Amino acid sequence: MTTVITGLGTVSPAGTGTEAYWSALVAGRTLIAPLPDVGARGLPVRVGGRVPDFDPLDHIEGRYVVRTDAFSWFAMVASDEALRDSGVDTAADPFATGVLICSGSGGNEFGQRELAALWGKGPGYVGPYQSIAWFYAASTGQVSISNGLKGMCGVLTTDEPGMLDALDQGSQALRRGTSAMLVGGSDAALGSPFALATQLGSGVLSESDDPLSAYVPFTEEASGFVPAEGAAVALVEDLATARARGVRVRAVVAGHASTFSGVGAFDPGGEGLLQAAREAMRRAGVGPEGVDVVFADAVGTPKADADEAAALRQLFPDGVAVTAPKAGFGRAYAGAGALDVAAAVLSLEHQVVPPTPHVPDAPLGLDLVVRVARPARLRAALVLSRGLGGGTSALVLQHPDHV
Figure 1 (tube, rainbow, N blue to C red):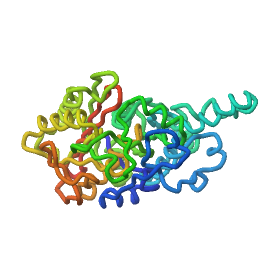
Figure 2: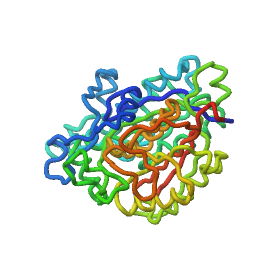
Figure 3: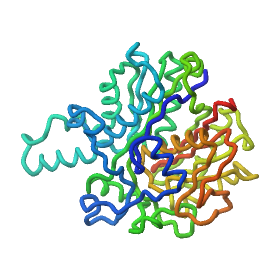
Figure 4: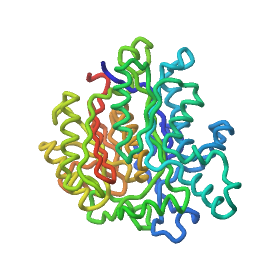
């Protein structure tokens, strides 16, 4: 069985929709901006990648908005786009389509508001939806409910590699008989002081107030990453099913692997990243010469970046194009790996490698794509993702014409 992506949806600091997202990526636009006072007052985090001008009522029925948080809104909007893009008829058999959405932090803003009411006024002022809106599985549940989907339903509570892992679990669900899966990642951890405060313990957030230099991975000036929010969701199904429906195949999910190599750090030493990448490539049946671009994890700290660069030099001794478009908008936690997967799919489609914004040169012995996008013959893309705590995943996506 071959798993393919036939639908894609995004909500990002570029706005809603994959068209806006790709336009920003290929232009290398800066989407990082100062955070509003509600998020940054008294905290060292000054800039972030916010989703601009997002009103949930423009996209979602009010009855769903009042009982959910922004991370669920993003997942719902991205899922709606992925469903439309795929053309799948979910009404024909509601049990045929499942949902698996990742989140690393859940409904921060909703939770802070309700806890403030509890401590400030008393339990009688806590709304009934506090019991579900903050929960990590709320996005999966609301996507399923709002679309009438009754197939396999689950959640991965994970950091940035979540979408990569969800694609693998989605493939397993397809092998067990599910016809289609909505898989994705979504986080919105910038909307409240509480959400930002919980991120400070990692010690890897940039404290710069300059959007152009706050997040510059693989450089000597790297001092951490800029937090962001957003989501991406893909509709996956079996290749044979997609061909029978006569729909466009956007990319092939060719190989995945994950490792765990340390607590409290981004894969110290890089051994986990190297092993995950090697195994994902082995499972995809491609060697170094078969991968044309790597979407780097790009933590933005000197040690983590040096470890990733060393792993890439071992994997690709003859070199490979490397990019980190997230430097233009930040790392969106569970949304980060999801948005990287979306970027890889779009790159394969357009045969263009988007640049790494804010980085002027190609450092650390890498063929890092900088300044402007690079047209290239792209058969396969390797996506790398590390989460705080040591979880690491790698994913190989292939252009459908090269499978």
